[in-house]
Each structure stands twice: as C-alpha cells, then as structure tokens.
Image (cartoon, rainbow, N blue to C red; front, side):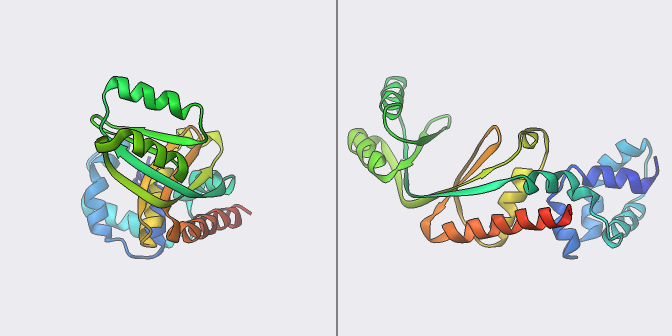
Length: 217
C-alpha cells in the first residue's frame, strides 16, 4: 500500500472532513499531524509529516470524493420529517418516580426519554410536559418550550457507517443552529431545536440530502 492510499483510508473514517477540505479551509499540516499515527499504522511504516501533507493536498485536488461515498449513499436514501408544538423537561428522579413517569408516558402520546446518570430529560408534546411538570414540582430542573423535532430517517446501514451523525451535527452548527437535544434510535436521528430554527434545520438537512443524490447520479 502506498502513502496516498493509506491517507485516503484514514480520511474515510472521518467523512465530515470532506466538506471542509473541498472548501479549502483545512490546515493540511495540522490535519497531517493529527492523522499521522493512523497513517503510519495503515502503511506499516513511519512516513514523515511533509509526505502526509502532500498526500492531503493531492486528495483535495484530485476532483474525486471517495471519502464521501458511503456518507452520500446514506444521505441520498434519507428523508426528513418535522413536528411542532414540542417541549422538554429535565428532572432528577428516584427509581420509583422514574417508573411512575414511564407508566404515565406509555399511555399518552409520543415522547422521547434521554436518561443520564443523575437526571432524565423528557421530550413530548407541550400538553403532556405541562402535566408532568405539575406532578414533579421541584424535581423539575429545567423546562424548555416552543421546541420542534426534526427526524432524519435513514437506511439501516447508518448504524455501521461512522461519521454520519457527526457530519449532520456539524453542518447544523455551521449554520449556527442550536441543537437543544439530539438522539438516535436505530436508523432514525432526532434533532430537537427551537421552533424558530425548525424550518431552517429542515432546509439545511434537505440541501445535504439533495446534494448527495445529485453526486451519485
């Protein structure tokens, strides 16, 4: 295996880098320093940093996008859905309270549970969150209202493709869209954002999906 191929294989592990490389905003020497150990393992030798810098420059100028191939296939087969009138509450609860909350949620509407070590965040429609907040009282640490859920439904291959979630989160960050919460379940990725950012979030994600479909034609 030559150095160019070793570098290409390493870059394939970080598909979101392709966007920045195509924009020519990546510091090649800094990136080379970061990936040098991985390139060395792929190559089975000890390349010098300038050689890796040269390989990165060639990769950028090649006019090909092998790094994006797997990512493009995932995005091209994805779709985006939007739901308004959502809210979230973060609470500290004991085991008994947790079971009581879950029992109530199972009988009412759609919800998302994000459980941490010491807290639980519940995302649901505004009416259900209001009821939960009333029951919990002082256990509620923080309440978020006027939220929307943007769900990206992807093919099941997303579970075996590194970098997809990081790429989607990065493009939203570049558009200065704040992600209040984020979660994935098998082939669905949910971005919980403020309602004022909802349409923009959908537009950005659909733009990337269309770009991937165009690239694969």
